Every structure is written in C-alpha cells, then in structure tokens.
Image 1 (cartoon, rainbow, N blue to C red):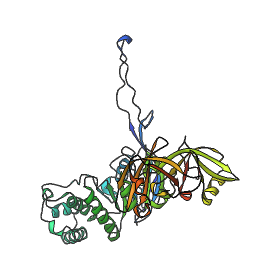
Image 2 (tube, rainbow, N blue to C red; image 1 turned 45 degrees about the vertical axis):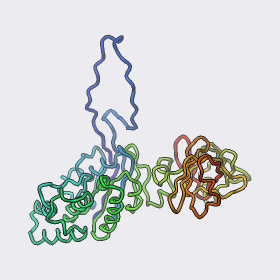
Image 3 (cartoon, rainbow, N blue to C red; image 1 turned 90 degrees about the horizontal axis):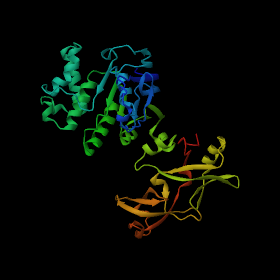
Image 4 (tube, rainbow, N blue to C red; image 1 turned 90 degrees about the vertical axis):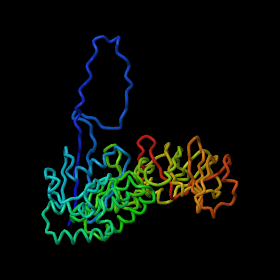
Length: 399
C-alpha cells in the first residue's frame, strides 16, 4: 500500500533580499521600472505553493502539470523531502513525514538531467542505491537484472553513461529508481531533454512500466500531452495554486476556468467575446450577428446556477467548430494560414480581431477555395461543446 496525502501544503521562500537604501538627494533618484510578477508575496516571503490539497490512491498515477514557475516541481520536492514544508501535513501510508529524512520516506526520484554517475557502468549505477542499503549481493543481481529486462537495457549494462543516447540514459535513471522498489516513484520532467520522437517512445515505455511495477507515481511536466496520456488524474497548477483536479477526460470536457481551458488541449481552445441572453425562456449565445442555441444539458447547468443575461466569453475547441451552414448561427472569419495535416486541415482565421483555429477533416471539405489565404469563411460552434466563462473571473459559469 502506498497512499499519499497532502493537506493544506504551503511553501514560502523567505525574502532575504536587503531593502535598498534610500538616497539622501531625491533629485538624483532615477525612476525604476516596476516589474509585476504573478506571485503572492506576504510578510513572510514569496508563496511558491499555497493550500495544496490532494489524496493519492495506492498505485495511482498522478500528473502535476502547469507552466514554468507554477509550483509543481516545488510540490514534488516537498514530497521527496528535498524542500521543507512551511505549513500543512504530508502523509505517506497514513504516516506523517514532514520531518522524516528523504532516505527514510521509501521514495525514489527520477530527475530531468538523469543524474547518473559518469565513472560507473550502467550496472554499477543500478547497483549503487542497493549497496548503500547493504542489500545482499544475490538480491542486488536479481533486482538489477529484472529492472534491466523491464526497461530493455540488458545489452548496455557494461557501458558507461557517455556511450548511451538520451533515451537510454533516461531508462537507466528510471531503472536506478525502480530497483529500490519504492512505495512512491517521483518523476520531475524526465522527458524534457529528449527530442519529440524519443519523448513519444518513452511515454509508451513509462505506461508499460507502470503496469509492471507496484508503486504510486507522481509525475511533473509542463507538457499537457504527457499529462493527458500518462495520468489517471491530472492536477493543473498556476501561480502556486491548484486550478483543477480530474481525469484527463474531465479536465478536457469540463474546464473550470479559462486558464484550464486554454492550457489543456492542442491546439488551444478558441475564445469569443459575446453575450448570453434568453429567448423564449432558453439561453442562446450571441456572437457578432450569430445566434447559437445552447444545448439542453448546458441550459440546465446555467439555470441551476441562476445565471442571468450577461456579457461572457464563449469557448470552443478547434475540433468543435464546424463549417456546416446553420441559418442565423454563422460567424465570419478570414483565412490567414492553412496547415495541411493529412487527415485534417488546421485553418487559422482572423475573426472579430482575434485568432481562431478550426480543425476541418479533409473528407468534409466541400470547397478547396476555403483553404486559400484571404478567403472568407463562415463557421459556427457545436452547441453541446460550447463553454461559457465569466469575463472578469474566468470561471466556467456551468459549475
């Protein structure tokens, strides 16, 4: 069993920079350009992670995802014991481990830069953590051989890291972690140094690995594709705070705010300014001169939250925009870029002064003239896939 619970976790980095001394002669003072950072600053210092709450089940694969500086790696390092927790409680298997040394937490960590010993062979790198624990030699050999077989690196056991490719080095780094048979395996952006082809290959390897070893995974990445393909659940973070926790399908289908909507999904969700109004007792979306009826389930969600007529932001993913003509529901755009992707075409439009991307299956294209730069295009949003956000708070009005 390897459950992990983070309860009201907070990390504050004390502000140790000395305050600038005031100049005596104010005439000599030069105006200083003020920089704005999206960080919460208190009297104690800079808040890197604020009120993080998460219960991770045994053998669950959790992915922390978000832009650089959002606090995901800091959270992972607190679980590992490499960062001190300012406030809150961290439990591993119902055991409070705030003050437990990293070596006593029964966790293993895979770093972004592999962190292999260059003077050791692959076998020696894999053996090293077990020798530190004084594991019997016969058991060391067994564990190393099993890990090497799982990861497909048996033929590289006598080589040194410099003779391996990036993907092979990452396999060794993962192998060194799993030979310890940890309760929790932590991974901090392990694929970020690999090229696109190797990243795809290693993602598949990690999925296979997860099925073969009995451990709980906590994985950090800024790549939403990795998050969607690897995680049982995804934790989306921004500016040190959790924005949404859910399965890949949940955060894709029901983003709680404009940040999640724009971060999850590739290409990103399109946003249109408009107005939510009622006609004959039902909600409709008004975008430019277009009137689009909202689907029945969304009608109910909006009514349950007593949402009145107001200016809103309508969101629609590129695959949820159609060129099929619907009377009174068409929005105008001008093609700026057309990307042929084989099975589909990505049309980049200028609509209402904003960029808009539509994914059109090539089989659905009735007129190739629509692909030409400068062409006028009419499109509409699929009613059951429209998202409705508050323009001030960014919150999804359905939830």
